[in-house]
Figure 1 (cartoon, one colour):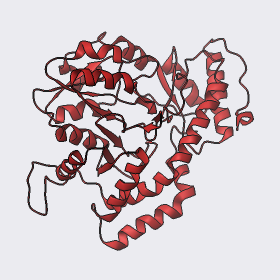
Figure 2 (figure 1 turned 180 degrees about the vertical axis):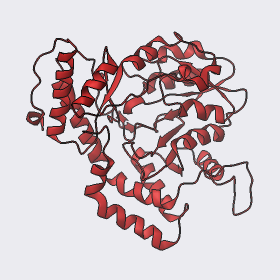
Figure 3 (figure 1 turned 90 degrees about the horizontal axis):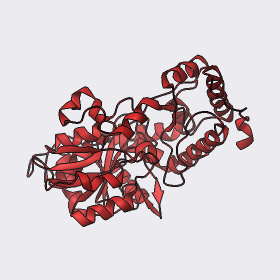
Figure 4 (figure 1 turned 135 degrees about the horizontal axis):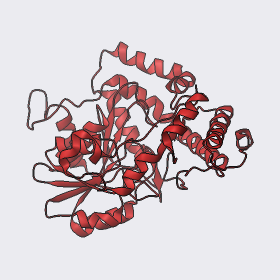
Length: 380
C-alpha cells in the first residue's frame, strides 16, 4: 500500500541526525523550554523572515495565544473560512470570541476576499485567513480590507511552512502568523508542537508570558496564562528537520508537477496551477464520485485522504454558530468531491506512476473518458 504520508520514509535518511539531537537533550537534563527551544525559535524566525518566533505545544495553542495576546475576547468577532480544520474555529472560541465564517475562493480554496466586507460588523476585530493545503490566501486583498477597517490579520499557516509570494513567506504577511508542527505537516515534530511568528517584540513578550502560566519570572504570575510550552526534545527534532525543509518542499512541488502532467487528461479536477506560493502539503483532486474513486484506489494499493469531509458549519459540535446547509455552497461542494492523493518528499517515480495509473484505471472502471497516462519516470 502506498501511504498518504510516510513518516518512516522521512525518518530513515536523517535518523542519525535526529537521534543525536534527541540524545543530547536527554543527556542534558533540560527538557522544557531552555536553550534548544530558543535556538529553534531563532532559526524558525529567520526561515519565516520575521523578528520573533515563539514556540508552543500545538498549532491550536498558537492560534489561541495569538488571539489572546492581541486582546481579542468575549464580545469580539473574528472572520475566518468555513473550509478548514475545526481547530481554527475552536481557537477563536477558546479566546471567548465568535468565529464568523465565510465561503472560499474556488481556486485558492482560502477564504474569498470578495465576501469579507459583507461579514464585517462593529464587533469584528480580526481576519484569520487559512492557507489551505499549503497555498497562500490572497493576502494583498485581505490586508487591504483589514487596513480599511482597522482590523488585525492573524494567519493560520498550519499547512504552509515556507509558502512564498514576492519574497515574503507565510506568517510574514499579517500581524501574527501561526504554525502547527503536527507530525504529518511539511515541518513536523515527533509529537505535538506549534509556533507563533511576529515582527512585534511586545506581542512576542506577551506570548512568552502567556505560554508559561503568565509568569514574569518564576512564581510571579502577572497574567492568567496557560501551560502551552514546547518541550526541548521536540525543539531539537524540529531544528534538525528545518534544515531539510527547503529540499523537502522542492520534492513535494516536483511530485505535484508529475501529478499535474500525468493526470492532465483524466476526468478529475486537479488543484489550480501554483508556484512558490504553494508548498503542496495536500494534493487534492475533485472527483464526481469520491467514495467510488477512493475504494478503487484502495483496491490498487493506494491510500487516499479527505481534507476535509465536512466544512466547519456542518460539524455537529459547531451547529450553534448558526450556519446551516447551503450557507457556504462553494465549500460544501468541495467537501463532497475532494480526495487527497499520497504526497511526501520521499515518493519514488515508480510510486508516482502507480498512483497515476491507478487513477486512470479507476476512471475507466467508473466509465470516465480519459486517455493513456505516461510513465512518471520520464519526468524524474
